[in-house]
Image (cartoon, rainbow, N blue to C red; front, side):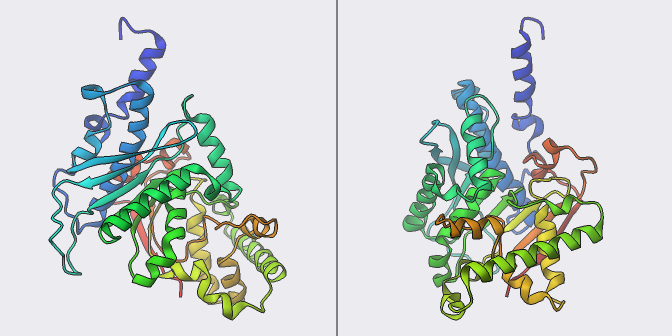
Length: 364
């Protein structure tokens, strides 16, 4: 690259990963909305579009130089609103509208159509303009404090506006990493009202952070099982000690976990990703424990977390992010090596290959 300094060369190499024509899902030139893999690829591409919107802003790429628009134009969407963080003015989300949606067309239950709207959220960007803010939110996520932040409030308001103006049918939520955490918390916030209507937003969570110890990374199966049982016992004990059991029946109907049990998001997890892989163990262990005598303890632990309980005891109420009652868990089994950039990256989720393993877990 003659004529460019080292920083410019590095930036050009990095931008290659943002160019749709180089790394995008070009194979998907005709989307069949009935096929789950097609919907997954589209949702991941729209999340990538949000990432690149922020990179375009940082690099001052506008007009024909902007790299983001092709990531939604290719699937016949248009960006109708950019969600901006009030603290650092970064782009963290966007609302996309399908260009050819017919508002007078009401599909039958068995028909699959494109979503009318998709609200997508990016994850952490470790560039100078966003590093401080994003890493701060990552810490707040671990401390169960994400909902007390302006970025979450902006996201919640955007989703509520879409629901008020257009209803929740045929609307998707999508997010990656930190963005998946935001999408999850938004769904928890609006879930009670949606449960009354018996309709939930279709949600795609890519590499959602599991805000507890990644027991799944342990190599010894017996050690993993023992660690999970010990964690369940501790959590159940804390639950009974801090919350008591006298209001069990009166509070059941107000329990967010139970309220959301009919909501089934799509969770995309890589077993080699230490940030999200514990979802695999969480659901597998929960299912296994239901058949054991310790299942009653597990049901108590399933709906609570140590961090959430201690936060509540300190007067800081919030929902523990990893406590999802039901889900389609889709595992990407292709990555053999422990490479965080690959195993936690959004790029893997629009690739076509036969290495997916999916399992439905339903809480009842």
